[in-house]
Image (cartoon, rainbow, N blue to C red; front, side, top):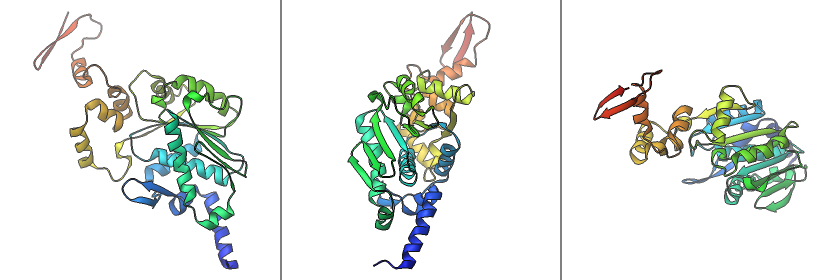
Length: 295
């Protein structure tokens, strides 16, 4: 039998969690850590910055290093919205059906490990499906592969596009989701880089030059506090340069220019560019360490 005092404390906690997303994640949200098993979500400063960015801008475009916890973060964020806010229609787009299932599974995992009193106090779960969560507050999360022609004809309060640079139909996906959120919804686009010139790179350039709707946000390999110079040097020794730039970039320029398995050695090209005489036609002659521009 729960005492009246306990009920009042739980109600106060519920109201605080509904008001303060960061508080909810740090005190009640569990994740499956690959090394430590089930642990509370320790919100890093960069992740807190991302939550603020997603809240401040309707169109958010995030370029990021790999394995810094952003998919885990967005899974927690979308659950918080659906659980504590009624009438949320949230749509996730991923590369494949498997990745769509894995993204929503992160949201379900946190829900399954909420305290019993919070589950009883919150909206009731209506749907148990590997690609959908729905509650009786009229909120739902649907996770699907990008090839599914998402939600044509309906409106979304939030659309999450995961690993956008790697979608097989990146431009077509944008064409189908833009009208879905155009009536007031939000878009969170997340991705590591996949070379330059593709649709995601074009979106990023447009965001940084203020020529499209997106607000850019970049998080390098060092965005997580448990990575230092020694960790990065190990990656330098074990990865090809283009792989390192794609997976663990230091700057957006490095991420796009050096990623995507380029045909030519881009470090050599950058070095040779110093010897170009602009405005003149010619070629670069490299012999050993000597480079000469010839007409």
